[in-house]
Figure 1: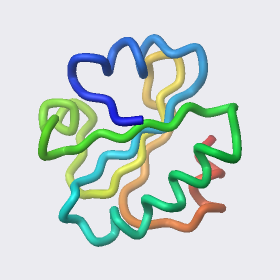
Figure 2 (figure 1 turned 60 degrees about the horizontal axis):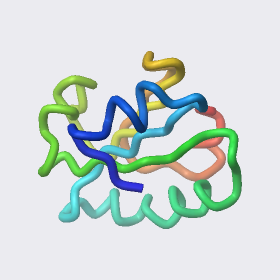
Figure 3 (figure 1 turned 120 degrees about the horizontal axis):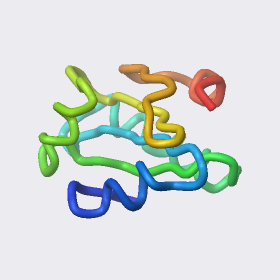
Length: 98
């Protein structure tokens, strides 16, 4: 699910479940490599909600969370950042963030 500035608060900050936010861009090679892994995780589990933010479309959100490189994954629990990692990573490492 893609989120943007308009629905970020409702979908992420007010979510009952932890939310993994994938900050990406369409032109980013490592982001394209990570996308199928993120999709697999979204389909395999229900404990964490997974959303995507396009940094080109929503640079304000990227700045708010200190995103300096992409892909960046940010785990948000109860409206607060619980974990943050930048760069491509294997599925097992992403799951450790939950």
